[in-house]
Length: 288
Image (cartoon, rainbow, N blue to C red; front, side):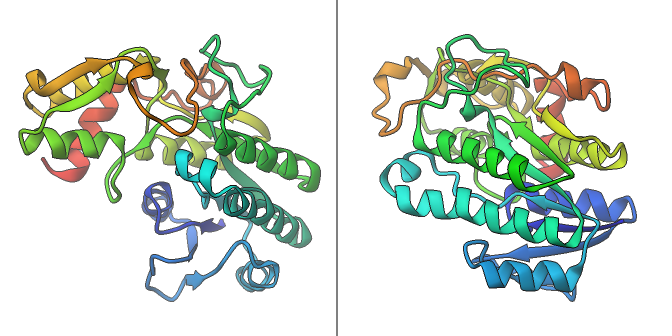
């Protein structure tokens, strides 16, 4: 199996490459700004159609996993042209190139395609994003469905893990420094360890699964309760964690209140980890 990971230097892409290589896949990767070295690595800007077609034609993979995106939620609100160019036009370039060579596309999407009014969303629930990031990712989904004959759309939630700064590693770093942190108690998510997501995606590839899947962590939890679990597992001071409400945060972009995902469908293929299991895996991964 020859697989190309687009965004191979990212939080998910790095772990995908590890998981695929351990399972004897023929792994290739593309990167944009963060250079990845190796004979199977290529620099590529997904917003440049010729660039995308050149690399995908050269590699000629069986499967392309498209992880590259502009994911800064407030940044997308401010820089809408850039967000659309990367998340929609870039995805269209990738989807078109993948379809041209007859490969399968795995597109990584997000829980933020939902408005958060009910939570525990199933794959066929109505998408209704409340911010521009979610809108661009939803439009990316539509592009994939329109162009590709063989695809899977994989929605994750609050991705975390080793290799890159993210919500959970920020919590660990701040608490280890003895810093007070403010965490919202009234926003619910399905936090997803990058190892867990990589394993779920590999199972989708192995099973030749098609369609939309919620490939998130196996538990709905508030950001505050997630932080408490992290502090417990890493033996950090919970008294440094200050509970606040979403209304107390001065976010530029609106956030969904409950964007947790129902993972029943993916559980038939690969059961996701619950929060404490995943955080312990993270602890092993980073060696703390």
